[in-house]
Length: 107
Image 1 (tube, rainbow, N blue to C red):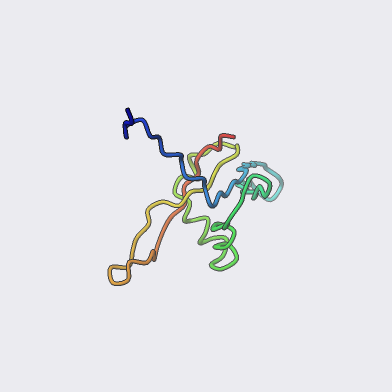
Image 2 (tube, rainbow, N blue to C red):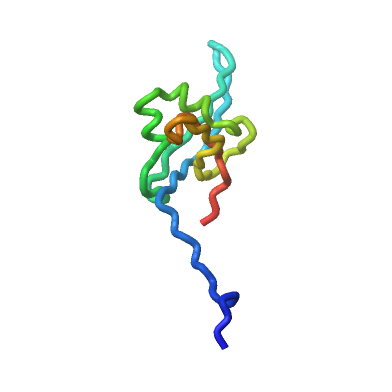
């Protein structure tokens, strides 16, 4: 007998995936103590619309960096960039604000 509970729905494949490598460098020279965090876009692991790369070119690197809510807590490694804290316009329902979060990337 046919039972609807036996039907399994396949997970919808991702349309977009942004993968980055986080590298932290700290050094000292005659001019002072320096601290630097780099996010490198990993093109071979990414596909679809690259929202963080688009935001860097549209609103600038500083504003994009400030939208990453957990970058100070992340250790060096490979991360997927996901959109979080979306806010919607109350009249149109369109997304008018969001932040980014780095999540450890699992292959």
